[in-house]
Image (cartoon, rainbow, N blue to C red; front, top):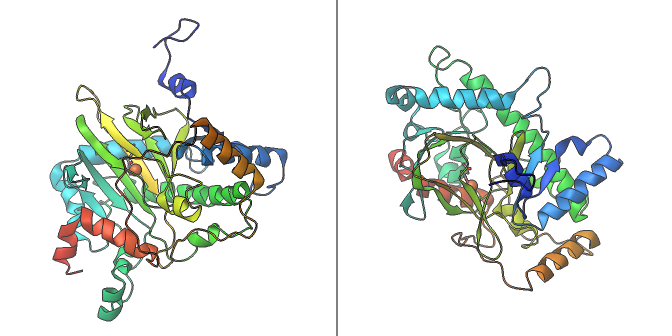
Length: 372
Ligand SMILES: O=C(O)CCC(=O)C(=O)O
Ligand SMILES: [Fe+2]
């Protein structure tokens, strides 16, 4: 593709030139002064993104700029990814997810399914590093999602130097960004402080995935992320697509220095659909020559909470309602098209149950093996 000036467009220019993409600058957000002009500008941009198709690009986060202690976290995490997936299968299988009742570890190519089609990816799942809860048969049978708490599986330093430190650094930085974005969303929606962030307090099963996808028809099938916010960093291969409200698929190419943020289903549920979770998939042309890596950090609400539409006296802010009306008018009132499978949740389902059902569906062997 060429730009109006005749130069070849880079993948970054391409993303900037596409409609439907919002680009937010995290450097504007000042948590110590939410009322500053810069913070307000950030909240305004976020508000616009919130009535969009469920995702935005976020530049200048510490994942990219880093502080002096953690310079270049993105470079470190992708180098780790490459080194990890280059290890002989036998090493990777030494942290096999099927050996972990906490659903942590390496998942072999082709084991995961979305929409009953095999995904062409292998991956490693991590979560917060913690000791398993003291075992009580009765408690675990009543609340099987408590199995999510436990240690990660890391390779020894001599096999994969930096494995634990790099993963946990990324995890902590992403967690803090998620908390800050949640506070900014409260301001964007015009709800009182803590109204959203309370969902992040308590026992949280935040997950981190390292993924590798080989050229295939279905890299990752159509879905909406089930949680709160997803922070997604991909290597330069591309392949991510988000579905527009009219049903068309829109490419979301990687942008240097930016992280892709998806709204998850729990935010959609809380806001009663005002904020839509991104319907997305990964499609890589079979002709792609490079392996694609992505580092996907999923933020979730606490497991013991039930997420229901927020009851806000007086409703959401006029500003966001106005933007919502504009968005509806732009699509001439037509309903939102999404090919993501329907979301099955009872009205009183704790979030832990939703997550448990999904994880067991993806990894039935683990439940069978540990009699969960
Ligand atoms: O790798 C990507 O770009 C997205 C992966 C994804 O959507 C997921 O793991 O939920
Ligand atoms: Fe996803």
